View 1 (cartoon, rainbow, N blue to C red):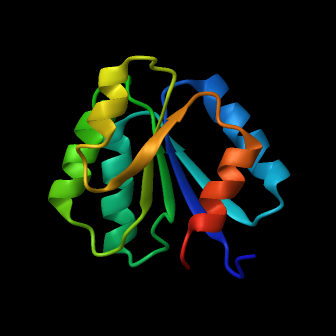
View 2 (cartoon, one colour; view 1 turned 60 degrees about the horizontal axis):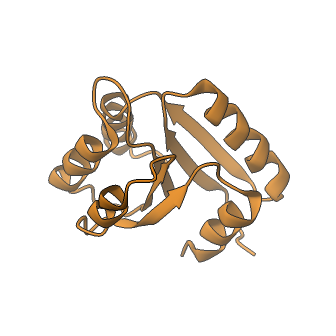
View 3 (tube, one colour; view 1 turned 135 degrees about the vertical axis):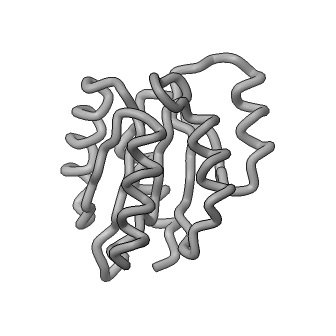
Length: 133
């Protein structure tokens, strides 16, 4: 069991999905500080602000693929270019059933895997337990 609070960033433009993830987070029993952003641009802005303020960087980032302004792939490319000094565990969290999306996930060095929606409490618990504080 982890001793410290887990910082979770969810990047998704679907309010229902955000609501479901919040409920799952509450049921895990872990201390989780969850922040949600509705597109990749807002998420990049948030990460730059957190870094500038030397605030708590997310341990885990869940990224939807299809979003307005900056989609999940564009977010990952921007994230990798910015080369943040702290590492987060990044996962694509998508309803996509396209094999090419799952394969594309493997082409990014910072992405640890692809998770099909909806996120389950069991899967979130696995991800949290895998974080190295």
